Length: 339
Ligand code: KG4
Ligand code: ZN
Image (cartoon, rainbow, N blue to C red; front, side, top):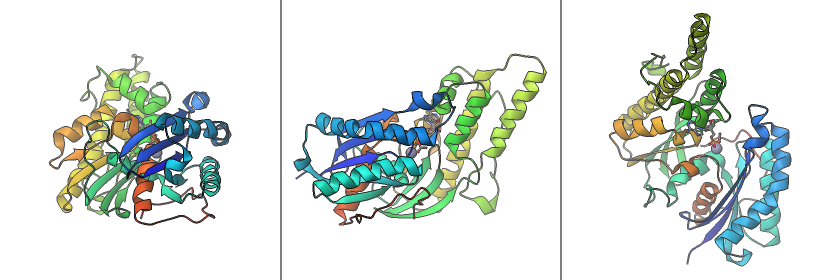
């Protein structure tokens, strides 16, 4: 019998709900994005985000059930993101999940948002026809996180390294703003890089040969290098070669990410590499992964890389199947870590 999990995700600026069967089969995946709302501020405005979640959460959940063509009697458990993320945003999802689960006498499963991103690789979509088999090496690259993780088995992780400063997505967003590109920065920068020369500018790759930081990342030097370069080019009075700058920057970020994966793949015996999070949507990162990794690797299709609730339902399913339940006093943890 297929066990259906209703997933709810409101950790940042997407209000999302999904119904997933056995952690793998997507019956519905509804994402109401707030991008237009936050565009004028050039980033997510937390207070506005939580207010918008309150307006959208009920219709989004209803649509997830309708699209999946299921009723509450078909749902086995409610899984919800309780951290990390924006406190006010997380609260909307957690309170909705608690209320609904309580009212229907369903188990409540709190899910770590980062674990959710990892489980996007367990969903049958795109080219992913079979779920990964741990141990796997995971790279999470999102707007708030850049972490290299060893997943030993379901729910058991060792954090090998992380960024020492900006997250990969954050540096995409900042450099996009610097180059006068749109919001959100990652997709805008990728579009701007089309047709640009990836080798046009030699940008620094931090920590490359630092033995103390075998699995860590640093992107602030790269950001500063692009800033200096644009300042120098502007001082020369020339038009900014935006496409070349974007292509070179994108190549450098992907190189830095893949370099750390290669080190870890060499150090640990894993069945495969899973890359996830918003930046995993990046075309140049995907190209380099395919070209440079010796081990098999998986990336979710683009629409499952960015925040969604199907990934939360998948992660929730494996916790549910292991008999785990959250208590009714489940609280939001904005700084929750993956351990
Ligand atoms: O995982 P996500 O949707 O939200 C967080 O949990 O942070 O990631 C959002 C981040 C943003 O920084 C966005 O600019 C970046 O992912 N992103 C991309 C691309 N699509 C989204 N970065 C580079 N290339 C892309 N195609
Ligand atoms: Zn995310």
